[in-house]
Image 1 (cartoon, each protein chain N blue to C red):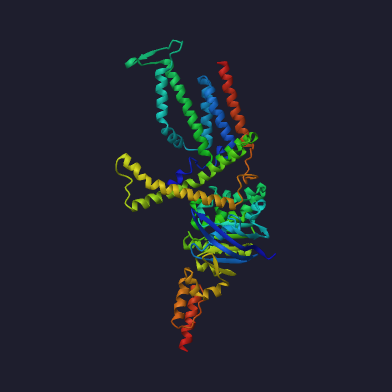
Image 2 (cartoon, rainbow over the protein chains, first blue to last red):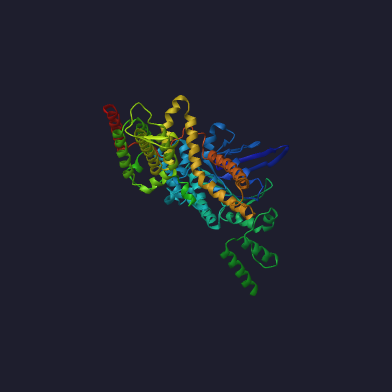
Length: 283
Length: 274
């Protein structure tokens, strides 16, 4: 079995008074084991709902979500599904339960009923994986946003999940915190072999992904590698995504006739491309 | 500054008392409180005074901390003293002297002694309780209470005990967050021209409404998000939950227990002899 998560023709609707809202309809995706997938979409594109369906927090109205071949509607295996697919939310403050870092990280394994020695080991490993080990006896409200979010990620890793779904984990953080989280996620994917599904509306965060899926209004409008997605700036603008400044610049230059490609994101790379293009024109 | 208030009264120090198991401290505190009231005369009370002073020294908490605590309950002490001074001591024993005051109030020698006795009892009570909160973090106190109440599971109250402990843990976790939020909302309302400091009492109470309502709404939202996050971390109401930090009695605890038992025994013995 190569797919850790299989989403098969799901529909999700909810009723708000008399109005019926359809968030997702006939929606399908597969997530490959060990992959790093980024799901891009603006607010209201259905991406948060999708995140909560991946570990069975929300159940689809129709269709099914399979985690390792187990349907999330299987109530008996609910805990096991939640252990395998961990979910990290936007606001780090509202995910931390205990007032001491290590006790918070222990919350998941404690619920799973592991023995105290194993929990201790899992907690230490998880805290080391997110580089927060030296803060283990600190208290969440003395930490920065990025540090709190790393503790929240550690709380999930301590349960030894196969996959972590992160629902806009950087939306409430400053640029420094954002960088911390992204590098942590990358490391977990590379070194700990954890499948990552990162849901975001920051395009920059998609650079490191294996695969980028663009959502708009509950539908997949693009599904490809980051390079290809970024070269299609027009589409991204159409679905209301924030395009990074460098990409925007390259895009405008290209529109006005300069021979540059728009598939780079880092400032250095962009500068190089522009330099090359100017150089080329001079010759 | 505000952040420190939320840490309760805990005063970090690595003393003998700090290292005791929270359960030991809770049980011994209850025992001492009971025996403060069991003691019938000055001799047995002085043993308790000596013990409490000794534990104060052991706790390595500066004296001013205790004094600060006593200042807060000064009105209660004075009230108890006055009541005892004027309204007790009308027993069958003839007092050594009687001081007649205005309006028919009088102070007898017996009443004076009884009032003093009462004050000493209250002081001991407060100091002993304060010592518990000074030397134990709110978290370990919660753990201790949960563990001590755990026998209630035999009468089908397991869920209740766990829920209470979980509530306390979450409350402790969110106090600083909510204080921070209150200040943010206050500043936001001030920026919109709200006047929180001036006006009559009624006006000031009314001015609090635009602070409390957003706070309430955001707390409900937080609670909802936290519940989802807890569910994602495999929480199912505490069924089959194992704690990472297991409380364990060690030699220190046994020593403390023995000492307190000896003190209690002495108090009973003195009560009987005198």
